[in-house]
Image (cartoon, rainbow, N blue to C red; front, side):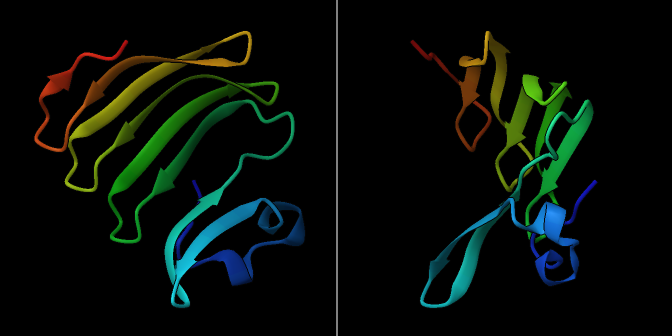
Length: 102
């Protein structure tokens, strides 16, 4: 588990160089730490508020399945990867309503 928002300055370089951030007027609005090369296991990311952002299962560095949440805790996307191609299984708006995804 990695706390992505506050920790980058304390992470080892092998992990920190995978950090991507978008800034708006010098404020961090998003920060994602990629899993290490050839990682196998469950990788979790969190919003700065401490709420869960995503959970992704990796095997030998390739994503297999995952889920993301809106910051209010409602499920946003459920997805899987087939031959490294992302397939969205479902999308939900921030109220939790299922939205058809073609």
